Length: 349
Image 1 (tube, helix red, strand yellow):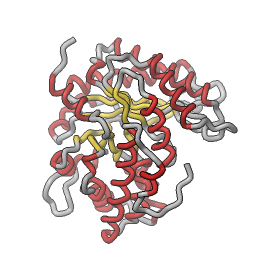
Image 2: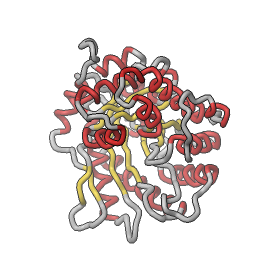
Image 3: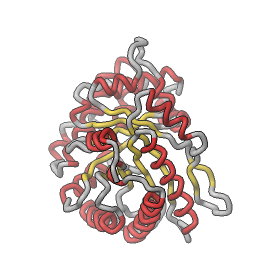
Image 4: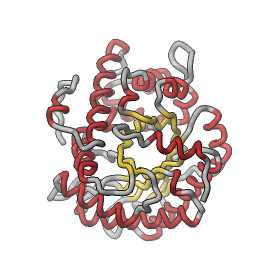
């Protein structure tokens, strides 16, 4: 199948070796929860100031290829009323993207499971987002592991909207990032996680093919295969790498140009260590990278604390974390690189 060169160029630009994607697409309620422990009021001005501080980090484009924004952020301008935030990013060589789903709701008749909403009016919203500067999109589905969960019905119900979203995005001239996240909450084993991630990905790709989505111009955002948070035996980084790569080889078509891992609640250091182990092992047909939210922003947010006086220090923290993950994509992350952190804060991987 033929596909527009512009889409291919965008997809490849997001996958430049040694770079990853900054997920700054927290909804207003979610970023409010992140601000609350630091006593930062969640006002539109504070949200803008925080995102602008992240996006103006000196040298960030050395390690970050794209940034996923929330609807509000896509429409905001810098504090001086000049450029829009997408223009600010583009001017620094970082591609602006947009989260287009509208969150999850309970899946009727399936307790403990959810489905993502947001297809209504999506075609028109995508056209507007492209005019506002977005060049790629993201849609997240959530799959929980538990007693008799997930059900086949839940996996199928989430695969179809992901496929429809991807088709509509490509129609609008935007590169879709499909994100079927298998949550790490619970006592499940590494093997159980691998089984569920595999089933979820197989269902999603069947849906993508059924909807005639061009796989060469999508990106997959997926979690690593991990032991559940409450599992008695936590897998080592190398075991995680083996299970993750085995699962992906079985489920992801080679036509997909790249896979970007989500952090999914891992600490920032743990997410970097595991990414390093996966990328160091390699031997796969896709480019591998990261698309982290909290695992990139956590130290920066705790350093910023809502104060303009802390912007430079917060930017240094973000730059360090982005650099560490950029090294991990190359399989070159090390304890020495971690020790160079400008933020003297004890981490617990």
